[in-house]
Amino acid sequence: MSVAEPRRIVLFRHAKADWPQVTDHERPLADRGRKDAAEAGRRLADTGIPFDQALCSTSIRTRETWKLAVHEFPQRPKTVYEERIYEASPGELIAVLNETPDDLRNVLVIGHNPGMEGLAEILAGSTEDEARERMGGRGFPTAAFAVLTFTGSWKDVEPGAASLADYWAPTD
Image (cartoon, rainbow, N blue to C red):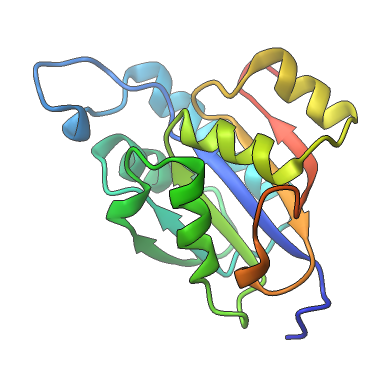
């Protein structure tokens, strides 16, 4: 694949988690989270994006979100469970994305806030359009996702390098 062809990064926040007496990393999804994760999976499948790889945080709630969402996909992408995504800052997430092999075109990242929202805002720069308005008006609630596009190598992912192409949240 040529680095001149458009690539997509989809940032997907885990669905609503429950608050049992466990560590934060071990928190499972709440009932609403299970419903929203499946709906987000249907919406992601409806985008028609053929994902080459999913990078998923190792937390229980992100793993459960991904399991329910990917069930809705026509084809399951390769999944990599990445410890560095848990509690990652936007800069740490960019470092993970920079390691993506250039033969991959479309990557889905399943993670947490404030990292997902911060990364979407940082990568999209000052682009103003309908998707940005919707994201800006709602923030990045649980089970929301943002679709960003860019051209170049994965090593070129940096602030302002992408455009926000789409945004969806369960309240849409």
